[in-house]
Length: 300
Image 1 (cartoon, rainbow, N blue to C red):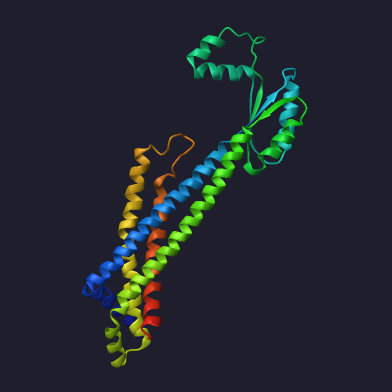
Image 2: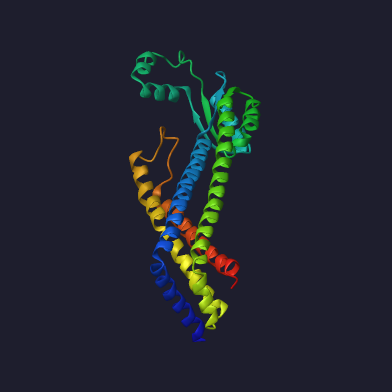
């Protein structure tokens, strides 16, 4: 029962010894892992933030529903009830023309001067419902349905701009996902082949182990653990870049790029999740590379 444990811990010891004994080869593998994982880390950060920008902009899209001037308070209540019964409605906010006037006056001293003399009867603004939808893909159908309700004068949601945004973000989301997947595959290819070359250069060492009667498992285990250790060490710098670099970026831009709509993802726990992914990729690829090298290239 104790033999597998002894073999495992002996393999860990031999793996660490081998890393330092073959330092130049180990350094080559670690450097390759570090460089490729940095690229993957940056790609993941960009991809997830692009998806976040898309989500925030979609959530901020508002349908503005203008009510006919002749509509009274009771009819406004009827319109609200009909809106509440509709599908794809996330929230509804009613603003009277008096409220809109106050908000516009508060936003600008020029508007304050121009609008302060307006009486209730002179106010040219219209009562509105400001509606957010659950699924932006269905916003056109939702707006068309709202427009048919009695008492509605006009419905606006910036159709042309929204359609452009949707098209652009679909391309961006698909592009970033494809880019990340391709980068991860390239990373796996580079790291696996680098580790294969490292282990291939020690073919003589493995041949001696076979001659003295070592089992396949006892030969493979140290190399597999060594690959995992190389992957783990190679992931240290990318993880530090993710944690400290992203914090610095977030603080430098105050959590947003160019506009409050384009907000960066809050660092915690986001950076720790990315760090675990990077560490996992490094270790997993190290294990795969070592196992494949020992099993196929060295015919063990």
